[in-house]
Length: 253
Image (cartoon, rainbow, N blue to C red; front, side, top):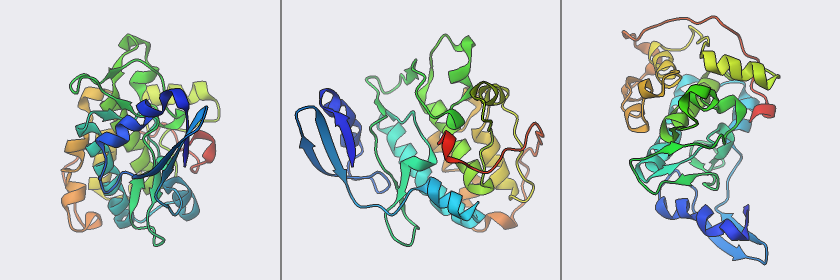
């Protein structure tokens, strides 16, 4: 259930109306309007993806691929419908089955519905610290940034956390955390397949124009190979040994 101030309930549900019927976006079951609050009820879920990763420490690559494909599909649908998610993180995705094989985006209450589909420039600084992109933190962007590209950075943080069990950038001091994000240096374990490492680096690029889009993401070889752990390819395997981040914690999610 989501509780929304009554003066913005229509705005909050506008994104859901654009995505109604998508397999990996939660469907609104009922809306109740009170005097000061709007109560939105969704279909039942079976825990969120963040808690699941914490309980397992990290996921096998095959399981991460299956779940992240569904995450990417939801984000692709949102972007293609003119919806920017902004506060994109693991906790936003919930399981729709007790076996925890199917996931969906729980709510779109923090999303922005674009008035002009081709203009996704945003100026607000909304987002979770561990998932925020470098350009949001930069003073050189005149306060405006591509919402879709920022979402794709957050996808990179999510994928890294699924595969490694910790954030690519982490620190208890927000100023140090943001400095690490602005530098964009992180380490990808060699135990991951080359295609998985390539995809992580293709999303966590400091320059937003160089990041994969949601459409391009689903065409990446990691998704198209039948067994990601068995393939070698020519992706650039640059190692950035700037930091080793601790296990995923709830403080930044």
